[in-house]
Image (cartoon, rainbow, N blue to C red; front, side, top):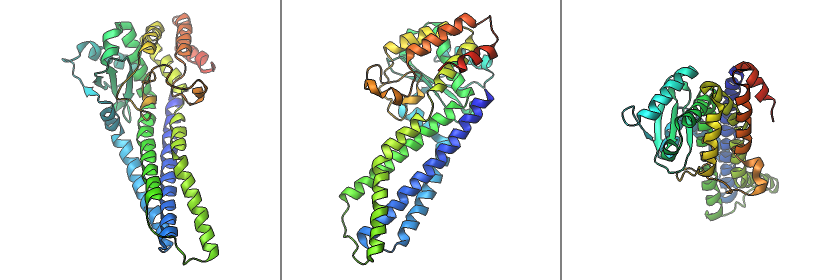
Length: 326
């Protein structure tokens, strides 16, 4: 457990540093471009890089403190009270106690599809969001399995990593698109006051900058997929240990896989959900390496294997068994 928490914190720091470096490189590319196209002093490339660094650091801090609100806002989730949704509220409350967690806020998505996600920067600021379709179509044991899965994400600090990835990856894509459009449609004249050597260096830097901008969607996707699919297996296992009933989550996943679509979901938030919010058969067959979720069938198989071990082996032995299954 503690190894997973430490690993997620290291990944979070790494992604933030990578984001800052990438934005700084884009800023430097913009400065080189302006210098090359308009003949302005080369000092502008450094100024743009410094400006980009300031913006990147500010966005990183902002994503840490406000990413959960951004995610909830993007999905249209609405906070509910004990009086409004007593069934799910009492389930979340009881399972939080069993997991040793503070009571998270409970949110509802008015979606017919069956899905759920957790968000927040730490257990004290955690939130669990469920779709209306999930609540209406799952029985109590199945719903408890899903909630326990999401609470495991909170306990493992998956939510910190996942929510920060959404904001920072989104900003990389937006910034690169803006810069790319300015490169394509911007006016001006090419500088002719440089020496041949200086002009060649500028052209090289400009080419590198354009490559960064063109490749930024791919780089952003790689960062997003760096949020390992293995964490879903871990949350399944930990959630099953909280409820002591792996079959509940296994049966829930069978139902969810049939209709998991969420209209307000997008590529940036996809990895947050318990199952892909785009449903089945939405990606090419060769894209398995780039899926944000492991195959549902494999997840169900592992949970069914856990059912045979509950009550026979200790929690530690069960988790050790699951760890070495690839």
